[in-house]
Image (tube, rainbow, N blue to C red; front, side, top):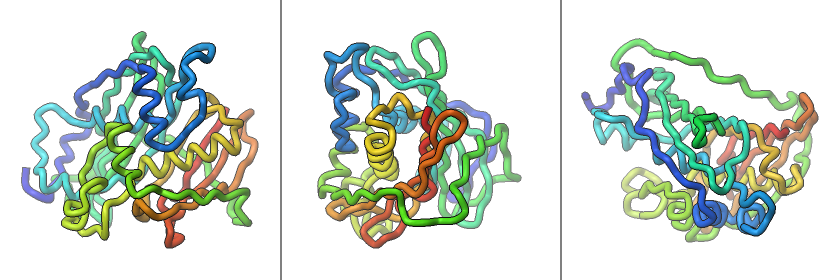
Length: 290
């Protein structure tokens, strides 16, 4: 594979499946990694056992992303950035589940900044029933495709917030600890050295280590669940958002609820997350609740 070229032949290929047993330790660790103290993630004496954090979908996606026989040039891969995620939950993750995740590349497209690669990751329980499905897009900057754009499955449309923007419904300012990216890396088992090693981050053109986009989105979800859904993550049917500006550990973020409306017997809650400079770290965030 030529450096800087993304093979459109990857469309339709499957990743290597991975399986996790959702033990209390695994569930506790992820919730701790995003500072979510909701008892449903920690009190293993509760009826029915622990609920797995909805954000655990990122752990499953990250660790099942590799394809057998992948020939993509490593230098090209290092130019990739996580652009967005859209997770649809059939039900909540639960203690005792055996979750198997496997992804399929469903689109490769040339866009102005580079090449957009879209994967669809399905997470199933021990009976083979789908628990969650994540569509996630990454942009390989400055790259080009090996041929015409390819797509084998469409994305699922997202609801749009109202056109008239008013004052936020609520806003939460949250301090991001200097060690937050290191803690999330180990608790979520999502390791990329730009999040933990300053030298690597600066060599990649970043000012410092940055917090994972998935951590920022999940912190936003934490605030929505606590402030809009009575602390009940089992009500979350869908979570989506775009990753934009950087969050530097040691600074603060602001989670803003932009709109909260009834829809189809449930709720549509639109939010964003701003970094210290007021730039959107999470753009067009939305939680659809049952």
